[in-house]
Image (cartoon, rainbow, N blue to C red):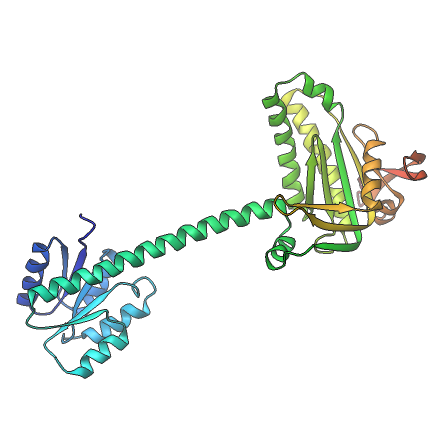
Length: 354
């Protein structure tokens, strides 16, 4: 159908009026749908898409006012333009129709030129409204895409804060637990593979780590090469941050074991965990990143780098938080770069209740 024409519903209880309107509208190029009464019209509108309704006022069972009122109270029909048609030429009828939401008013008998002009004007308004609706729907889709991308970079509370306030975002958290993980021997392994194989390899493992972070309500901070960083206890504080991180660490070992079995590999992961205070904030103005700073972060990194393949090394602070529900083994005192001697522990497993 030509874009200038539309599907017009004619609602009139008089057959001669319906036929007359139908012929005139069809000669103008419109497609016509007819209804004998208001109830039939409302039923047809549920199943038939139309662009304009020509609605008679004086009809039995349900008059035009009642039909118009029901249409305007229905979310799916309220924006459909309606031209009221009637032999009544009193001002009160016109005013009532306009107040109920009619687009226009036509008197019987119809003037063909006036009929054409008003029908075309209503259809043109509807086309503009449809374009506007489509534009706003597309705009909403694009905004949702942007929102999802932003939430892939920043935690939701931080993203919301950033949208409301462009000033520096920084917070202190007194109790969090930070985890660093690193794939042992990755540099040698990657030198033996193509770039695509390396990226596919990391993506497969880190995607499962991401799922674990979501499962345990943790915040992934970043990946650097083959290193993975996640934190518990921010941006929303939680009392079980150490336990949540411990659960993820043990599950990460399971991910690596399954990966080795399914791909005939022999890789190992080294994990370090530390608990304590951190500063968290957003860095950058064009390419945002949410990052952490502080001694707790540095210690978690040292626990990983000075740990052992296939093991989870934790600080004394993390040990205190986990010892009741997890099996931990004292490693002893080690020399930690930048901190001197420290007593550390291996997280082995969950405690099994008898």
